[in-house]
Image 1 (cartoon, rainbow, N blue to C red):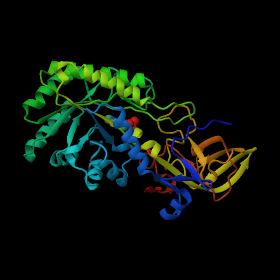
Image 2 (image 1 turned 135 degrees about the vertical axis):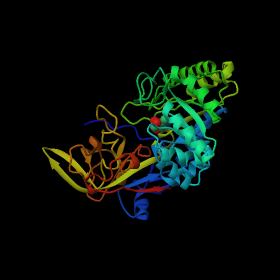
Image 3 (image 1 turned 90 degrees about the vertical axis):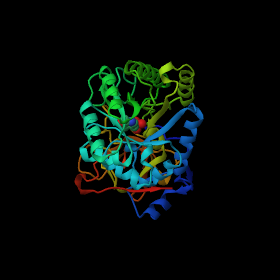
Image 4 (image 1 turned 90 degrees about the horizontal axis):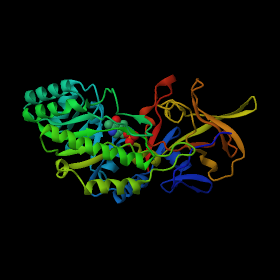
Length: 408
Ligand SMILES: *Cc1c(COP(=O)(O)O)cnc(C)c1O
């Protein structure tokens, strides 16, 4: 038997069936028109932002990094809750503007921005987080050609990384941002070009559960921003401090101590160096805002045994849940939180592996978990499915097609 990750707080059973947003998932599946289905809870999104507001200093704005989940109904909920949106492609720009989000609240990071993406962003008034000097020159030239003042920030490749983070984005050679020593000359160039100077974007890593490590990174980020502002000889209007707040996915993971992160950042804000006293700050979060608010549901199509092991074969799989299958940025496969949704809260009675319908041994959603006995027609649930699920999995693989999605 292998342990399962911790089920996020807030999921309950109604008549032995998992409920989301106060409704049984069997009813939600019927309403959506079948499985596989991602269900997201609007109440959980609201509760999460409220917790963040409570814990973080008032001065800190909260942005949503939409790559975690660009489902439009989610963006609409967040448009009433968060202060800004971060995108990483022209496609995501189309999604946020299509969702009715004010482009002046949007910033656009990401390497390899094409001219047509820069044009669309500059025309719309989106802030560009510049990833290189060459990109800066293209943006300035496009602004001149369009007769539109570009809003330009510089992404800094920090000299440090977020300790314990699942995905390191800083420290050493990286395709993201400019190395620190190259930043001050580009700041001068941007300001001299007549562009609107929007400050720094410093993102050091993702998926950290250690509050001390997050606080430490934020302190280093502030120190770096202050130093670069000083060396650039210009006040810093804005600084995006990155994010990196993680959620527990795996056995033994403990939730981030948000109060501690907020307290430490508050202390930093009380003692800001001169260069930063006028600066507006934000963090950009993806999975922390949406991950735990989503559940992936699939139906058991077959129940079989092989060499004494039970396999629950479902109509879902890694084509929607690449991360839960262990094939999205993890080294050692471990189990996400999972349950038999139609026997929710029932005592486990057997060891079973939940697999998908793809013809590859990689397609395993839960390996030798301990579950109540499930039969054909039962629903399985994979938790922590709100982020990097539907949009970060190879839904065309083996001709399977995308899952349904709904917000309740
Ligand atoms: C992916 C990404 C995020 C969101 O990361 P999470 O781990 O989901 O919070 C934020 N900022 C940047 C620059 C990113 O690339």
